[in-house]
Amino acid sequence: MMKKNLLVVLACAALIPTLAQARDTVHFLDFNEVVQEATNAGRLDGSVKFYLGNTPRGASIVRKGVTTSKKTNAFGKSDEAACSWVLQSALINLQNAAKAAGANAVVNLVSNYQNKEYKSTKNYECHAGAIMAGVALKGDYAKVR
Image 1 (cartoon, rainbow, N blue to C red):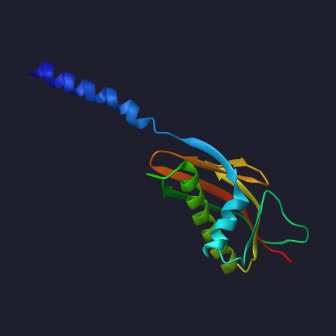
Image 2: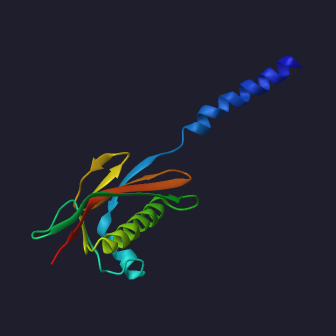
Image 3: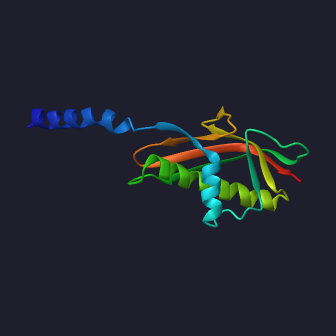
């Protein structure tokens, strides 16, 4: 009986590394496509502009180093769909906070997943797994003309 219980425990323990090694696929996807999708759907109202990887000339910084980190359920969704959804959530958060701070733009926006910056003027970084997808962003609130 003791040997049988020991075998069951060992068999269960052998499964733990498999369960713990969750998928984490990194994607670099088109930022403006998602902004346009969110705007078309009315999730973004267009009052705040997003400048990925740069600051337009003449911008006046209102608050530096703002961050947002969002996760979403990815179960049953393609990685691209989950990544789009989670980026939209992050952008809505930034839009609302920028307006509350008196800004009309988020500039110098970079991906900042696990505090590692990925800077691009075209793509954002998204991490997708079997259950969750996540996006982290960092930038500055600003007033632009």
